[in-house]
Image 1 (cartoon, one colour):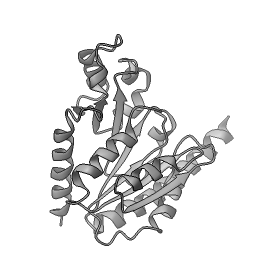
Image 2 (cartoon, rainbow, N blue to C red):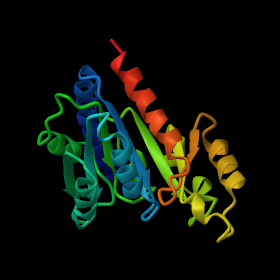
Image 3 (spheres, one colour):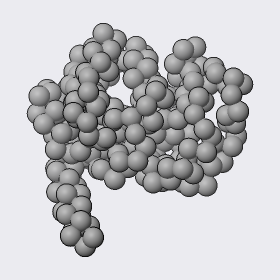
Length: 223
């Protein structure tokens, strides 16, 4: 058991070292980096498609799309107008790590990039432990899931800065309670910024887009 823990610590230590290098490089370029995480099917790719639609002509956005077996998400983002998109196919791994991201970034021209978004593998467990060099994690939860998700996966919500509640157009079709999920999330992390969106109807996307623009602007002003 001691050996297993030691190996795990060594792996995470090396990951953190590489993540630190990524963070320093992006900071020197004043690039805002978000690590977007969720369960499978919560709507990460749909949200990023709508983000490209709204901001693709205003900001230079680079995207790294992680998936277990296919590059389908990366293909969708390119069709949505993504100019700088790199897929990462983990081949079964349940999360991205900093080395994977570093290799993907080596294949992207980030010289004029304003915003880097990393779409992590659909999982609320493993990705919570891996720093990818991001400025912040954004966790998505959809109204087709249980409103107790923050209580079941506290580490992810504790380490995230933003929670986006997606698929609000489906509220009322299940027992999902909007007020309850917010209360559960804030119980875990009282500093969470919470937004509500529907990628189908567009409701709430303006707030998300305005938040992104504000964060990119703030990053540009950092000396």
